[in-house]
Image 1 (cartoon, helix red, strand yellow):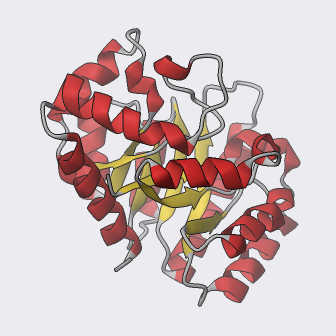
Image 2: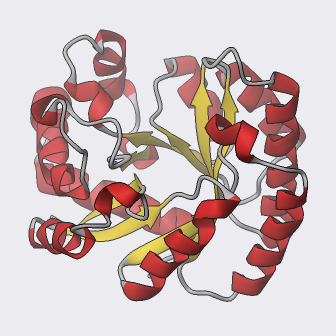
Length: 260
């Protein structure tokens, strides 16, 4: 189907026992590329070990807001060093996963904003797109992107905002990551929104091992599920051939990252 999983965490220990088998099954099902999103300095070596071992895996570098208490200001210096070291690597594709998470009320918002802004500046410096984690903070993220614009745009991972916010992100050069959330019947708002969004703004993702779709409830999520997610989205909500959706979303991602 010529699919690309635009957001997964294949470096997580959840896949240590069968990572190669998972990748083989996903490839056989039509997934031809995997973007591994970083979360913390501690995990960067694991992530890049997986990227170096598999030619169809691509990596990012960044500090995830969810893991705020694990980050230290010196991690930003380490991030700059890593970006400098890998800036010519053909499979470094973005700064991420970064952003703001207002849903978790025990995470300091000022600290989140500090790390977010400093990483946007690094994306500017190294001329890279960004992969953004945004929960209950779309207005703040959009305002920040307008103050610290990223020339190459990026992806709003697991987008679940409004139509107006989607339009604002499009103006800023951002694609919208769509994963398993829409497959749950309770996601009425998202299911109503998706047919209104331009295909040129969508990319598909799994967020494996997290955010399992409804058809894999209570299971470890996996890139193997991406083809079924694509088919369901195409058939149930977009009324188009799944192969067309796969081609378009993969082309969107390739354009963003400058892949041939």
